[in-house]
Amino acid sequence: MNKTSAQYDAVIQKARDIFIKKMKDYGSAWRVLRMPSFTDQMFIKASRIRHIQETGKRKVDESEIPEFLGLINYASMALIQLEKGIAEQPDMPLEEAIKLYDEKIAQAKTLMEAKNHDYGEAWRDMRVSSITDLIIQKLYRVKQIEENKGKTSISEGVDANYLDIINYAVFALILIGESED
Image (cartoon, rainbow, N blue to C red; front, top):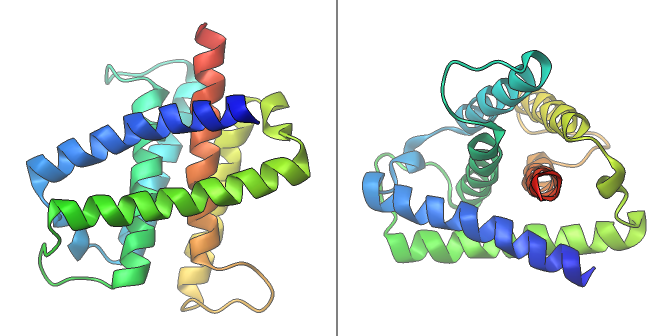
């Protein structure tokens, strides 16, 4: 578990660095996005990953790695948006965005540690393609919850699905990194 924690932190550091650099470039423009827009953006990224995995071809010179990092960041931003609400214009300074980002990631890591304990790190025996499919499934669930105006009768809410997406994307990146070693 200590190995997983260190690997998790290393992946998150890469995603966090990208988040900070993009905040410096674009500010908090993402604050104007409605929740379905976050879901759709993540769906686009996950669909590209799946297409690359299925065909082995890509015309844009980027691997799956930046897309998985993007999933981590968009899911984190979506969690912030759920908490703060949608802004009419970019309204969040860098320091506040980083603080909230770190809180959402800490929440995801706590969830990962609890599930990892209970499931015995079963994800380590999964294929990256299966993890991609689970992310897409989570996004379809979120879309359905959004269509239901956020109401569920028995299922977890949107936030739980976004937390799982963060963790699945981290797992995929850990597995990719291990296969490259």
